[in-house]
Image 1 (tube, rainbow, N blue to C red):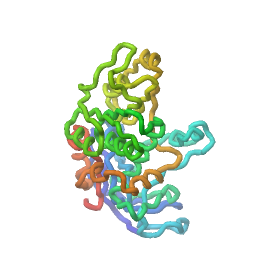
Image 2: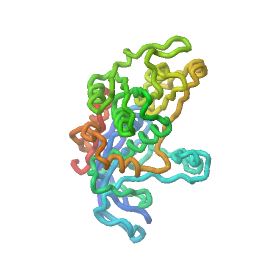
Image 3: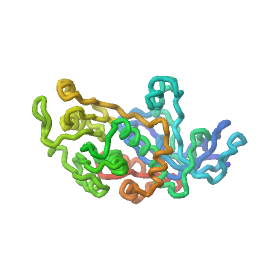
Length: 344
């Protein structure tokens, strides 16, 4: 088993991440040691860093794939060299959220605290064997690192009950919005408009298969108590921007649905009169459905997802995490950035 020190990207406070040496974690009973292959940079990582929410010393990163490098006697089902992703802990199965297919907000589960996590912006992680899911042979480790955000997207699409005949708006053409477009297309939804201020991201959305990509300023304003001329049945707000959410609400048709997917720092104003008159619905999509990551892994391995467009071509080492985060926050990168700790 590897021992000693490993390299990690650590939050040091004041909105900064630095690379340093820390002890390789020692697996507790029931845990395995996993060498991290790839880890995606998530929007929540950006919030934890740039809003200063993370605690000093935290190692972020939760969208990962890896390889088992050490097992214990209680983990006979896993062998050295097995390629894995982390599967979420199931809910209790009996509380109201679990019965409604939302185990991520199970009433028996303690709230997660990502501020103080020991995540995958590091060379190794100790992971509970019960939370591991095998990566199929048809899926490489780079694509497998998309399992977590893909599971989130599938959950959001399921909550919205969106179908092939629906007109859909996606606000925000960054990694979350692009993945939402790809999942919608895989589910047979073809009429998709992306609202995004950055031209680079609009171009990527069209390449993935969006019907139209527009600047947010090009979206029409609805009349009092009415709809725009070409309203949408469902809108997925993926940017976390308050004004984007407010504008998305205005684009909905009667009985339309707004799904909040992206987190933000400023709360959006809700036009309750519009929601009443048009009988609109607003939903929050937090994490995953009861099936966990398996449907996401199956979709990624199916060959139907445009993986080369959803993932940036070049991985970054741990020393590149801070720079990549800054570029993502400025909209200078379109798709998912993967961190490869072994390159450090």
